View 1 (cartoon, one colour):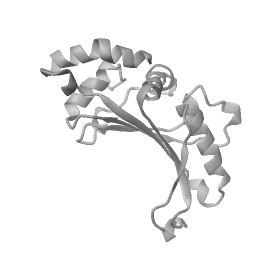
View 2: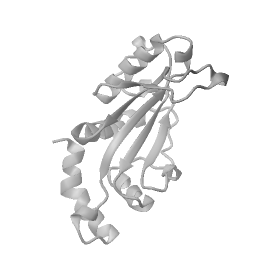
View 3: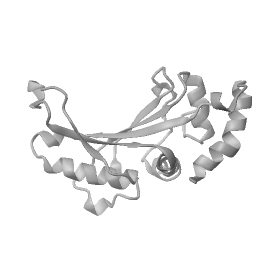
View 4: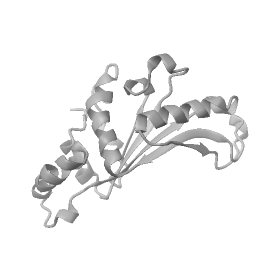
Length: 179
């Protein structure tokens, strides 16, 4: 069992239940999934960038990433419908908790001039999304093998529709929010 999952079941659930005034353990907010998404603008001119991005995202997530395709054509960006333009991976279960542990304790402290994550990034439905400008903050990615610095978006999806409950859940995982 992942360290954060064990911490959630043994420590966080009783604390949040008491803190939020909930009567049942199943009412306590929980993580459903974490989605990592990387858009590759250079893929319009050269498709090798998609392959490299999928490999990097696979290393970061510990699970095979897939290439995403354009839903519709955009002439201004020279994008055709069905063209591969990004990479994504969805993490659930133990891999999700292991990734969250690595993100909070290893990757985010390596961000240059890091002052914390904004509390305003909740979407109104209890989900939290933020962007990272450099994929090299993850120790799995060897800096010598990186051809371009790429950013990625991370979405943390919870089972609650209340932003305050979701913020309390992430705070209990020691999420580094700005003060």
